[in-house]
Amino acid sequence: MRKMRLGLAAVSLLALAAPAAALPYLFVVSDANATYNGTAIDPTYSFYLDGSPTPDASVPDTYFIASTSYNYSINGVGQAPLSDVATFFTDMNGFNTAFNLYTGPALFDGSTDAPTFKTGTFAFDDDVSVTVTAVPEPASWAMMIAGFGLVGAGLRSRRTRVVFA
Image (cartoon, rainbow, N blue to C red; front, side, top):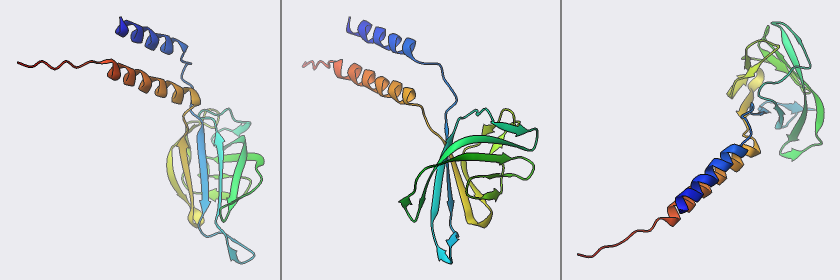
């Protein structure tokens, strides 16, 4: 009876699950050699884009533009968020943000009309590194936690019998 209830609970959770969507991507850009008025600074900024973004504008086989909001810090001190666009190039392999133009490896595959981002850490010119990671949606986390709860409940309800001969 108990197993039947757990099975029904698992099936109902699966029925409530939303269809899988493309995960958003987190871009973290850090510049090891940045200076401001001759003083070394350590700027880091980040922004999110959809896993399958719909470009605001694009030129086939050249670039696409996506709107975003940047969160950034200088020497570890957070600054006010900045709304702007990010431009990703295919013809010169790089991208342009509100802060600078970076040349290096291409950060996406596919066409400029339907780009798919790559994940990993990429080295760009002037000791700039870009880390691109996929970020799970809250629904994915909720389903995973519920699954762990069901497994825990199943393990807890098991009874072991000790038989002495």
